Length: 127
Image (cartoon, rainbow, N blue to C red):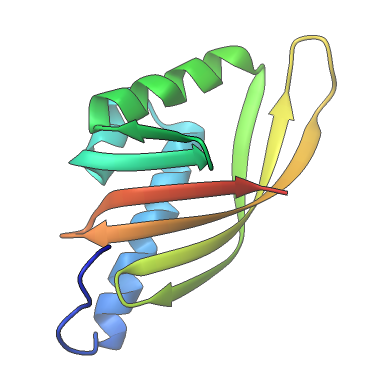
């Protein structure tokens, strides 16, 4: 479990944490794979399901590359965000298109833990 932050964050600090996630989603959609590294801690964990955890920046970016290669289109849109200290909760709409199908929209929820303005934990749930 992560330790609690020592003092309440200022509005500016909370906005900066929110912007890390907003910028990460932008790069996830439109940027190159190498640009994702700047948003993730070296020991980041990504949990895409209850039974799987991907550990480490290189492994997480590699997994993202595999997902991109699977779909003709994979796009994430932010529906809403909530920031509570170093944690950002996000409601997401994802457009997934396979070569043989049209676009399929999936709703999801994610939580991002931010440490030193980088994502250290990312949990994803799909509805």
